[in-house]
Image 1 (tube, helix red, strand yellow):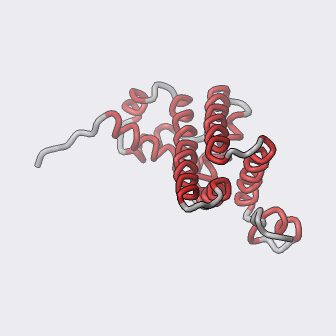
Image 2: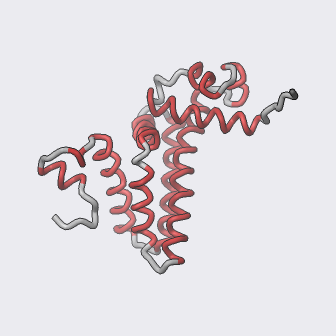
Image 3: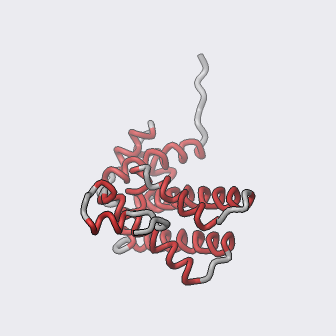
Length: 184
């Protein structure tokens, strides 16, 4: 049997997939690179060959999560436009589906928390928001207030999903966890 070697790009992908799971479970600061390397099926030394510092790995992990959002938004907008539907609504629905994935939700929450004290994460998060803003503005033609509301609702959805608010039978939770299109 011949052994097939993985390319550096394939290994990088495996590392980022593993890092998504480990960072989601542990957070940015507490995610051990040994655990990421093990989950990716490589040595820690090889991990550091591809990502020379833990911060570079974390930045790439945050960017990967946001690339997934960007790609999903772009696809949702294109499909909505083709069907004569509202692309902003389609992107919002897509985001709700994305954050049903616990790892995706946690990556977003950890990235926002990490932006407060890790300058490289802050810069990566800023870049990701800028790209998403440009996409939403371009695909929807919405004004600044509408776009601000779209992102604000997304952030509220992150928090309410993390709290499991949809499962709480209390007025505050019912109102804040309700779908933006629902009437009270």
